[in-house]
Image 1: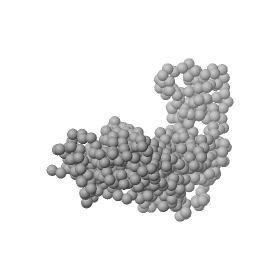
Image 2 (image 1 turned 120 degrees about the horizontal axis):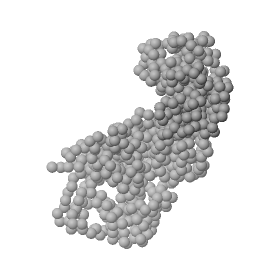
Image 3 (image 1 turned 90 degrees about the horizontal axis):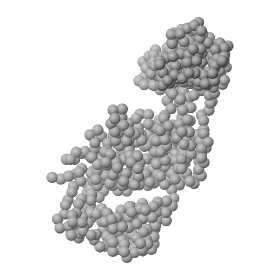
Image 4 (image 1 turned 120 degrees about the vertical axis):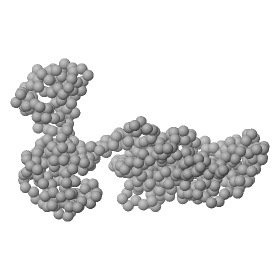
Length: 609
């Protein structure tokens, strides 16, 4: 607890905030800078400069945005019950609110949002101005509306009771709705109950279609209670429960899937790099093509592209035809790190990134479509939002899967004035699910490790590895050219199947199918028939069926021309060597397919004259 010096029992008008701060000890000032870090950036030259900054409207508004609901309610009550020349006491606040206001008042004093002592406390002028519009859901006072209580406005409980004598029931219901806020009502055509309330001087007309309940009348209607009920703890709505094994399996599956999609993106953009838009980013057509290749929605393809940018796997490459998005040297590493290491790096980078992938496809205020990897997707608040959403999810019991509305309600209790919209919370939860930080809607164990204060990439990778199924180095190829891998394939087996077969299903086992198109794609990518058969025979426990041997050894049907299929990894930008085996395979395909006049198409990022 910080130590503030004793203050007088009255707070004079225009109390000097600088003088108050000068009387604080070092611990109290350090606590103030921790809770309001904007006061230290840039470092103030003196206590007077810091006090000026602390009393400014911008700094006070930001500080109010960090208060939880009970503390903010205490601040709004102070705005109603006190002035610098007429402070109130914490005991009076407690009686008006119906809950203990001591902690809330102490937080306001520690943050220099209020001045005085528990016996005589009032808000600083900046906080009073920031909360003046509608504290506690109350409307403007009579004086602000140009009215006088002496003109017959009921401002006491007996006067309001007398004014409502004989009121029609619809008028009473309408007045009850306005009593707790918002105090302004809008109508296309003013109904008869409103006319009755206007005649009884219970409502005031703001315009032809708007009426307002004056503050003094609302306070009289509420009696001695200023608020209905304020939860003193953040709500944790009941949520579905998931089993620990289900959560771990779903999280591991999602984590592996997103890493696989990143690999597919780098390979695809190495062969056919999309151009960079004039405003930066990737075009809509290229994103749709990426989504089709991944077999996913465009929103997920945008997330994969943004992740590739966050991790430095893709970047701008300039050539004779312009700029293109192509893999970097990092994205073309021939032997990537183990799955768990790559996943740990990915989620760590995502958590600290200022990128907002969920905004891809939305439009700016000027109607411009936001593109993936565009520079205008940077938001400084994104890292804090991600951490807040995951930490809110961690407040539920292990295995609980609350929806976005429940998480947003929890966040709104902590910061009512700066709570994120439900749609934004849902977008962050969707990204966390896609990355494997949640499984079946519940926070996974690796996700909890990521949020820990002492988290390290090694600890995160170790937690993710626990949920991964064991690797298998075998498969069963059947006569109909389908193959079954009974588990998670070894990296070498996964690369082989990725190049030579089409994946039909994934789960506890993976099913693939060898087709003429998939085999031709492998041959076009530089694989030799003998190498394919040797590798398949090494992994297959049932041997290689004869139809598959014929499919690999027999050249595919001629197509009339031979186009550029893209270089292998060793031919991409930033690499020095060229794959002789790939060039040899291209020559075999060219003449073996009957393509008597081959068409060589150089990639756009390396076109030769």
